[in-house]
Structure formats: structure tokens, C-alpha cells
Image (cartoon, rainbow, N blue to C red; front, side, top):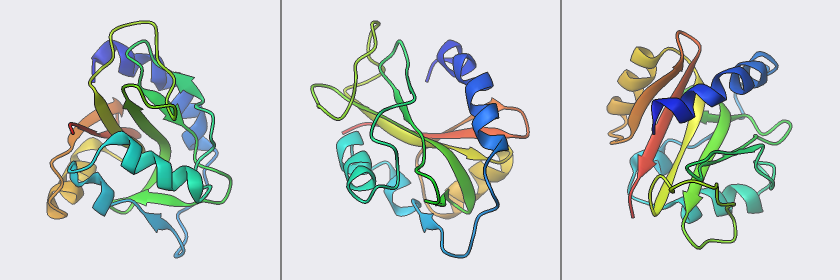
Amino acid sequence: MKISATRTWVTMLTAIAVGFPPVSSYAYALDSQLDCKSNAHAFIAPLLKAKYIDPNPMRVEVNSVNAFRPAQGSNLTAFGFRVSAILGYKQDDALFKRGYGQPIADSAYGVVVVGATESVEAHARQYGSRAVIHQVVPLLLTAIFCSGP
């Protein structure tokens, strides 16, 4: 993901993350889906169907990455970290809105979690994830991102 696109999320995601309660023992873990062996539709569609995320993206980046907000009380986690946003885009898929720039990839998906980049990356690698781990806000927000199929 381009750094310029990431910077546009900083203010928005910081505000979102501040309002989240602690992760409960009933959290829904997205760990297995973040193995980067899937595509954005297969990642996002079940979350929408189960109403874990709001159906309308809270933001659509220039590169077409759609950022979805977790639904109230959904308690999504990734590798033990609370999820503050769910990301995705698949070309020619009605689930996603297209930005006005060049799409990031044919299919890309991931999450933004509350946690330091080094810690998030260590946990993701323990689970065998091939995701790109990218700092969004130092010591606060980290993106876990897959692009492919």
C-alpha cells in the first residue's frame, strides 16, 4: 500500500481506534483469513453476511481500497489485536466501490489493528501469515495487508 494513501487514514483511524472497548473473550478472530491465500471477495463477503462489518465503506481511497468499519459489538481480532478497520478491493466486484485513481491490485484485503508494528508482525509470522505489515500510526495502528489472487 502506498504511503500517501496510508497517511490519509491516520486521522480517521486514530479517531476510530480511541472509541473501541477492550477485546472480549468472545472476539471473532480473522487470523486464518489473513494467510494471504484468498481474495478480497472471499474475505469481505462472509463478514458482511454475518454483519460483522458495516456494509458501506467509511472511506474509499484513490487506489480503490475500501475501508469498512466493524459493526457495533463485533469484536473482531487479528493475531490477538483488536481490529479497527477492515480493508478490501476486488476489481469488477459489486461489494467494492472504485476510487478515481489506479486500483492497488486486482484483489487486495486486510485489516488495521490497534498495536505496535513490531508486535503485530511477530504475531502474524507466528501464525504463518505472508501479509505485508505496515505502520499506520507509530505505536498505535498497524495495517495487515494481503494482495493477490
